[in-house]
Length: 225
Image (tube, rainbow, N blue to C red):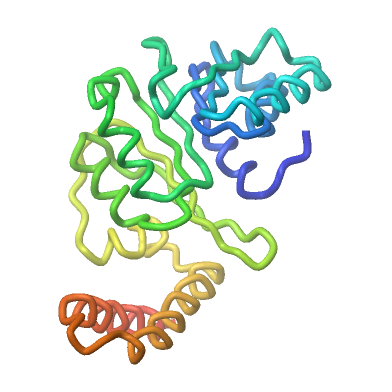
């Protein structure tokens, strides 16, 4: 299964011999990729979605690649199809605050979940803070370029680590590495804020203060490179 670089990076973070649930599986390309990676020796793969259309296409794709015995398809919202032997949750291509909502609805499941692999489209800081406050730490972080877009992929594991505001903003591991993709990604973030800042209404005091602070931090970090 040939999948995009973003989904491949997500899949490559899955631990061996784990039991996985992919929330919002769409056409199950990631799940097929995982099923075909024999070296992972996964115990279970659940591909779930809250729409019947994508699941029907997922079923056809799974049949085409002859991995019907390895993937369980489930219809349901968020963590509602969860089974207690699942130790790894994957969510990719969804907003960070939507991800928080999914976990908040079933906080009781977090005691069984060892690993969470996410690729949020936005509000990355919010989801990082939420999971850290609920007993996880950032095990791995990656930036992946697909076409003209750059995505964050984050792997959380059970454990306690404290992070600074700057580490939450940039990603603690990404900040240490500061590779070329890091520079490109955060240079874009700086440019977008510099364009938006003068357009904010005068009475958006808190928003303007926060953005001004972010612009300063971005300039400080990028200036050192």
